[in-house]
Length: 546
Image 1 (cartoon, rainbow, N blue to C red):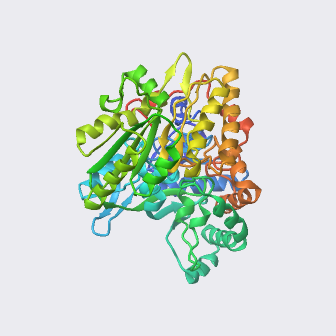
Image 2 (image 1 turned 180 degrees about the horizontal axis):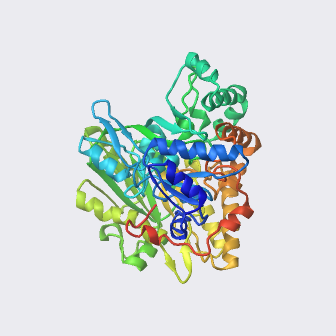
Image 3 (image 1 turned 90 degrees about the vertical axis):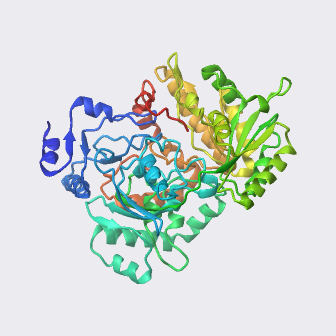
């Protein structure tokens, strides 16, 4: 064991490793990037996190850099769960549900708690958190908060940011703070502190007070329903002048502080839903159909295209149900529309949705039968066949997987996707959240080949330019991580990017917390970190999908 690992082990209650096998195990996440850490630590307590942060900070003051990356289950697709310094792994020990108040519908948890276990516990009390990522069965709540996770019900319920009440956070120098909304009098007290927390409040207040024009210009023109780019500055201060740092930490991907506890809001759980499935012959009316359906307030409007249907049929013989097809009818896409909490009003909405859909296609059905719904949702959840594709050296790469555009440009977005994949002569399957115009596509490329490695960057650059051109976001339901950092400026511009940099340097003046994530990674660094082979085999127990 090296000196750093030995020192940490003597001061922490958790375990510390620096052997080659452990370091290699944590050199990848679900992204196409790879970075080998120096040390792997399994913190047992908040005090362990604080000691690690203080140690790293003290080294930085002596001009030695040992950065820190917080990691849950490593499901991040943007390279935010890897780093060259200390990897702090939370699921082993800091995985507890600490407190549940079913009356107030609040739950207090540690960051390493499994999202599925949390949901199951809440459901035994008639509650749930309605926003959950596709990886919720094996990902952590800390990772969901760090990435501001969205899910298939986000059309109605938003992102995890809408369900986080308060956070306990270890700052870059080891200070421990609690977030929550505070008024001007308390803000002035915070700004008077000589601590890092005081400096953070001074910087945040100044950024928000002195840059109204920059913030208004950016957020006023942002017309997408999902966006996780940069830091969520718009949600920090209210008109009454109060400030809550919670939104700025949610989605910050471990670059501003390390979350040690979280209090989340829950709501009553009702597993019953109405599901409408429809097959459409053409994309021509998709924007109109989706817009009309959105007005009815469904919890989900998802889609898969015909290429996707053909692919899953070839790979796993997952077929389109007989009552949605006929010999002379080949659908261009399927739409899945869900209404949850089905009382009389929701049943009426579901029937209205059926009436809307029937104006465009006769190939549709509405059901609330559990087994029948599962039969149809197998098709939507067969994204695992695409996401885990790995044959002949080619793998399904999550490099442009998180973009969204204003809903009125949904048709244009789909056509743009087909056009770019055709240009690069690549097969394309399109699926995702049509209700938010947030679509997923994975190029099949062989990272062992130089030409394909070059295509990774060519595709990203062209794709993101086109997304921004039609008013979209390159980071809708995942963060920027490392993979999208070189392209953030395309969307936000110089002035907004400068504000993100001020926030980062204010919270983390020595650049110790996940450096290169959100800010500070260029294409050359991405090229150096690009894996030679991509695989999700280490997640095979859970069959990843998106």
